[in-house]
Length: 99
Image (tube, rainbow, N blue to C red; front, side, top):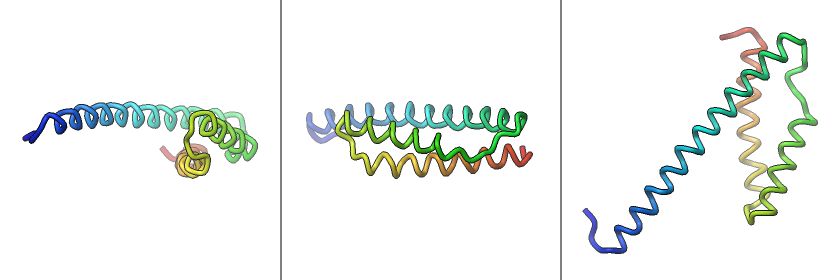
């Protein structure tokens, strides 16, 4: 139960944040699905899974985005470290022939 008009405003803002989180997670899922497609391509065409130059490019793009939008570059690099770690794991499973 809301105690004051300001609580209602807070709930509206939290609902907005929840909606953003859903979209963020959907985009993350779409990114991982695209990495699965890339892994299938790499497996079919005998391309190495690890592409350090591509990882560097993604990290640099995230850092530039942070600089342009006032988001910590270190935070975005760490976030992408986690995302890349997971997508490499998924690619490794696909390239290794697992389902």
